Amino acid sequence: MNRQNSIHKEESLGKVFEPQLIGRLMKYVRPYWFRVLVSVVLLISAAGLEQVGPWLTKIAVDEHIAKGNYVGLVHIVIYFGLVYLALGVFRISQTVLTGWVGEHVMFDLRREIFAHIQKQSLRFFDRNPVGRLVTRVTSDVQTLSEIFSSGIVVFFGDLFTLVGIIIAMMMLNWKLALVSITVVPITVVITFFFRSRLRDVFREVRLKTAAINSFLQEHLSGIRIVQLFNHQKATEENFSEVNNELKSAHLKTVALFSAFFPLLELTSALAVALIIIKGGYLSLDGAISIGVLIAFIQYTERFFRPIREMAEKWNIFQAGMASAERVFKLLDTAPLIIDSDGAGCCDEAKGRIEFCNVDFSYDGEEEVLHDVSFTIEPGQTVAIVGATGAGKSTIINLIGRFYDVTSGSVVVDGLDVREWNKDNLLRHIAYVNQDVFLFSGTIRENITLQDDYDDDLVEQAAKRVHADNFVDKLPKKYAEPVTERGSTLSSGQRQLLSFARALVRNPRILVLDEATSAVDPETERLIQDALEKMMEGRTSIIVAHRLSTVMRADRILVMHKGQLREQGTHKELMDKKGIYWRLFQMQYRRVS
Image (cartoon, rainbow, N blue to C red; front, side):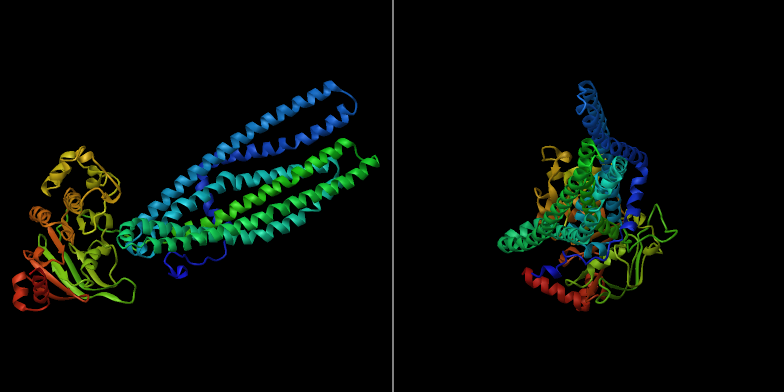
């Protein structure tokens, strides 16, 4: 498998426009501006207090130790304690505040991303692996949180500290201050040299993380198939390949950091060496005191600490920019299907459906439906049959406007579905699919999908589709926990719950897509009995391969290669001896 061409590999990214991205990120910080302001004040205060220590050292050496003033030295020690106590309070408060802001920003951003993803059409999910989307909502947002909790605000705190150190050094001795600053250009060159390389590596790490998340989601969801076909070894090899790519990306960051920080330490050592040489000469010449030289050495060591910290924050910043770029690219992906201005709504739908010369293509090239036209009157039961790939499921997807037609129109109750309010339209339609998806929760929550339905209504719906036959035998009945995807229930039981899920909503239009193909004959008999009750007075559309399930339909639509080739009752189509007749004969011979 070529991972470079895999769906899990994301597109290459262009240059990061940091100011633009930061501007967008600040929108999420604005609601918490007061806490950010307090945090900045605390950082500035801490930056000022940090410069008091070396100055107190100078006073202690020159004014008290050199003169043998023990009482004065004790006072200096007390001042030291008070300064660092206040500094500790400021640092703790600032860390708590920035962490609080980071977590709330992350909460808001995750909520917005998830809401945005839910608005996307099915075509979006056809093109984006679930693992990639999970990475956006989890890993990328977590990285963005670090920008706020230990990135931007703390970066400016280090900048204030650096400015404070420079001012203190200038006040002590401007000549020695200039000696210390001479190595700053070297630090700047090193930082910018590594900056672009770290940005690219962080991008690669995010890309590989998304790929491994996609792989895990896909193969763990399909673990049954992997084991049934004894494909564990090949899957493990493929995972090793993806895992190795992620490892290699992380090792690149290790290699860069292993060179970056030692080089910064080297420049710091160089600055201290220059101060000792120049300061020692000035001290021997009587130009400065020993206390000033000691204070300068302390300031010089502190001078490069905020520079190192800012370099590290810059790395966090770059990782965050790579994540921000991806998150905002997702948020900038406009839903393909949106309500038009003044979209129509109605409380009581009639259930009349009309396809008018509909053409449709999933990829814009190969047509799945071509010039399809038919009308379903309110209350009619219509079956759609045909070979695999004939376009049956596509038709029912277009009715709910999960996709938009390429040309032509789909009309419900006299209004093009593109003119309907989609949420309102789907309130009148209930779908029952062959592949039933159950969520982790309870039986009741899977029937109601946590909408507000009375218990009596839920139990009545379950009873009408005979789901109560097995639910009542469960220890907790409707409060019985359901595991992920309903793995502890049989396929027939899951299907019965899906019928109850549809019925409790009292839909005007009922769509059954291969709804009885995964159940045993006894369960199918129960479902057929329930269907007759469910379809009374409703517009019902049945998609089925097994023609025995559609013989009683008011009308049968026969699809062939994306076209509507025949329509009529079972008897009319059998008398015509066309496509439907041949399909029926083939199934009859297989059963025989």
